[in-house]
Each structure stands twice: as C-alpha cells, then as structure tokens.
Image (cartoon, rainbow, N blue to C red; front, side):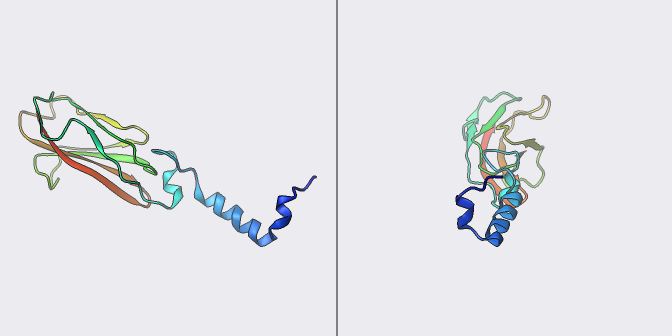
Length: 134
C-alpha cells in the first residue's frame, strides 16, 4: 500500500483525533440532513411571505421563509396573540423545506401572528413574529 507524503507530517495520535472529529461532525450543510451533527445551533433566517401586516390574505396561505444554516427542521406557529401561548397551528416541517400551507378550515377572518423556529439538537433560531389578516 502506497503511503501519502502528507500523512508523514502528522503523528498517529493526531490522525486518530482527526478521524474522531470527522466521524462525530456528521453532515451539516444548508437546511438539513445532519445539521445537528455540526455542534452548532441553527443560524439566523428571515420570514418571506406573507408580508408583515398583510390584509386580505387567503385562509389557506402558503407561508415561506429563507433557509437557516444547520436547521434539521422548522416549527411553524400561528396564533391570535404574539406570545404564541395557544397556537392554532404548531407544525413541524423537515429541512430543507421552507414553505408551509395552512390547512383549510384552520383560519377565520381575524388577526393572526406567525413565526418559524429553526431547530436542531443544539438549539433554535426564531424568525418573526409577523402578522396577517385573512
């Protein structure tokens, strides 16, 4: 077996440590598929639509947001109060999905607040809240 010249610059213990580090890091990357293995909480991200204080929004809106680096999933919450104490929607979508369609018969013509929480095993990042009225 031919030995690489670069390996000659490292001690056996340094190579063993590097192998452990690479194995424990997992995947990582944009949006999902192993972000929890990076050791980092999800990065900041933003809500896209509907726009804040939008009116005349359909009762089945498609909520969209930008991706959060290292997120493994997103928790979408909609509530009539911006403290989100009793959300009418509290759904989890896997990353890299960055949209959520509100199910029919969920919303009525009242003011709603919405936010998205990027999650992984190391923490959370919250975008929002924003408000809209169907």
